[in-house]
Length: 460
Image (tube, rainbow, N blue to C red; front, top):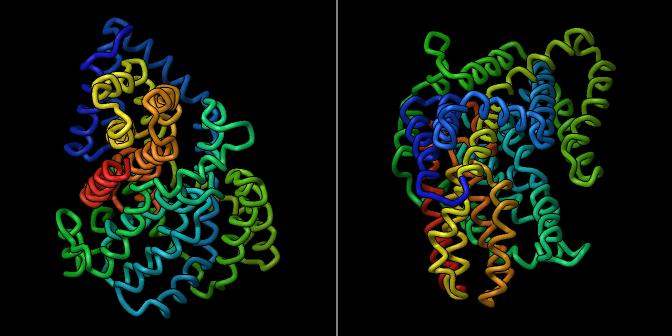
């Protein structure tokens, strides 16, 4: 395509409709991508799909994600099988006296692990779900708390992978001087309204100031009435890949060492955070270093033979394949949307409203729509910053406020989109069906987005 067109919105509509209807996000994304390729060139659907999929698999980000998610699954498998995670759960239950306190513990743990949203989503959900299960809290509520303290928290902290990535983009695009990317990023933190609202809203929901409503209320009522926390992954009713993964992890807990020691959980998690910081917020290097120390640490205690340990790690890697597959499919879908010029169409459609007073709110609205439609929070920022920032300078808008609007939209997309990487991993870590998690948290994400939109109008 040479010009942006309204047909570019067709693939996102197809994906969202099929994801809700079929409850199979990978299939929905693949079918949406095929529809996009058909719109581009019906006679070359197969060639274009093959080219795009190979392009995505050669992408360094995808390679990094596969290694990080798979290795994290391996580490989780070790933590579970040796009884360390079970020991943490037993001790956490002593502190958590009821549903609210267990969810507040989840919330504070999510804030503490602020380095990376992947690390946050997987660690917090996996750590706390045994505790919240005990108090009959739905997996959907757990996943909402986890997801709300993943990207929204990481975006507010200058010592995170988000800050490193976006700070670099600000320098690359001439928005910040060389070496001043993080400094400019920090100036925008007070204006990242969606992230602030999303993070503040969680304890308000937990304590009941913001009431339960919509699908979340139904999920919580069902859990309180004693329906099994993993009803959707009963072995006789397993349907989707993430259900298989959740059931597999549950079986690992059933086989875990009941006499596991708490330090066998705290030491690896502490090492992971410390190594990630040491290697300049590089989660992959942090995981490698953590596994390099954890395996000998467990061997020295004779917790299990090396061969069994490696087998557990392989099984843990396998448990992450559904999440990895979803993100790969989402990247292919994003590539189609880019070729259809969806970002340019959305921006052009709203350009008439791009005045200094309306620009931050319009940027947040348009970028939030794009991030939600494509499932790409980082990618959308990279594509649109060269378009948005010159426009902001031209109309003499508040630059930190516009950057805050962009980052707010990115964190909204990361949390709200059904097939964004953060949403997928929050559901995975919490043992929740992906579509159930997305549907139950969406009303709260939209409420936070509406508040942020009004905030941008008032601040401009």
